[in-house]
Amino acid sequence: MILPGSTIGILGGGQLGRMLAQAAQTMGYRVHVYEPQKDCPAGAVSNREINAAYTDIESLSAFARDCDVVTYEFENIPVEPLAQIAGLTQLHPRSEVLKICQNRLREKTWLRKNEFPHVPFVDVDTNGDLSAAIDSIGFPCVVKTADFGYDGKGQLKVTDEESNALAVKQYVGQRSVVERFISFQCELSVVVSRSSNGEVKAFPVSENIHTNHILDFSIVPARISEEIKVKAEQLGLAMAERMDVVGLIAVELFVTTGGELLVNEMAPRPHNSGHYTLDACRVSQFEQHIRAICGLPLGDPAVNSPVVMVNILGDTWFNEDESKTPAWHTILENPTGKLHLYGKAEARIGRKMGHFTVCASSADQALTAARELKSKL
Ligand SMILES: Nc1ncnc2c1ncn2[C@@H]1O[C@H](COP(=O)(O)OP(=O)(O)OP(=O)(O)O)[C@@H](O)[C@H]1O
Ligand SMILES: [Mg+2]
Image (cartoon, rainbow, N blue to C red):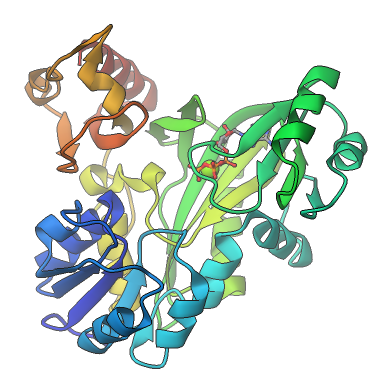
C-alpha cells in the first residue's frame, strides 16, 4: 500500500491530471506533474511541475525516482520511454495497457482476440488498399487513423463514391482502420476501477450525447433498460480484469438500434463522461483512481441523485464575432448547479475549458435543466 504522505506522479498536465491531483491532495498525498508545456492546469494545483519532453529519458527517470507511484492522464504518451522507467517506480496502469488503448488498431485487435463485442473493422496498412477495405465493409463506414485520435479528429465518414475518393486521398500512407458506421439508439460509457489488490468496482453507466464528435452531455442514470446497464457494467469489469488494469479503465459503447452492445473504444484513465461522479457519487472517479493505484480499499461508486454533466467548450466565450465572459451566475444560481473550470488561460473553439453538473429528481428533468443552463451561458 502506498499511504497518504507519499508522492504520486502524474504524466500529463491537462484537466484530468488537475482533478486527479486535487483528489490525491485531499487524501494527503504529494503530487508531482510531468508535462511538456509549462503552466499547465494540473501543475497549478500540484506540489511540483516538471516541464520536459516525454522522450527526455533523463528528466523522466529523475521524475520517476522522486515518486512512489506514477500514473498518466494522457493517452498519447510514447510507450517506449514509459517502459524504460517502469523499473524505477510503480507504474499504473502498466505500460502494455497504454500501448493497447492508445492505438485504435491494437485496441480493436485486442477486443477481437479476447472476444469482446466490437464494431466490425478492417485494418489498412500504410501502403494498404483503403478502397478495398471500404469495399469490404460497405457504405456507410468510418475511416479512422490508428494513432492520435481524439474528439473525432482523424475520422471521416464514407457514404458514397465521392466521400470514398476523398478518404483515399486524405488517408494515403496512413495506418488506419475502416469500421462499419453504427446506427445507434444511444452511446454509453462505463468507468471501472481495479485496485492493485484485485478489487474491482464499476461506476454507474452514463448515457452520452456527442455534438460534432465531442462529448456534450453525460446523463446518469442512462435512460435504457436495467438489463443493458448490467451488461455494460459486466463488460467493463471483465475487460479491466482481462487487461490486468490497475487504476481506471473507461469503456465507450454503442447501443445499436437492435439493442446490441458494441465496444467503441477504451481509455485507461479518468474519462470525460465520468466527471459527474465528482458531484453525484460518494467517491469520484479521480479519488477512485488514486485509491486503486495506491492499493487502498475502493470507495462506493453509487450515485446519490440523477445528474447531467455538460462540457463547457471554448466556443462559449465567443458570441458571433465578439468575445464575452460566459454568464457563470446562471449555473451558480441553480441550487444544484456546480461549476468546474480548469484554469486554462486561452479559450479556443472546441477546447475543453470546464464543465458543470446539475442534479434533479429524474434524468430527464436534469437534462432539461442542463440544456436550459447551457443555452444561457
Ligand atoms: N463507427 C461509428 N458509427 C457511428 N458513430 C461513430 C462511429 N465511430 C465514431 N462515431 C461517433 O464519433 C464519436 C467519436 O468517435 P471515437 O470515440 O471513435 O473518437 P475519438 O476521436 O477517439 O474520440 P474520444 O477519444 O474523444 O472519445 C463517437 O462517440 C460517435 O458519436
Ligand atoms: Mg470516443
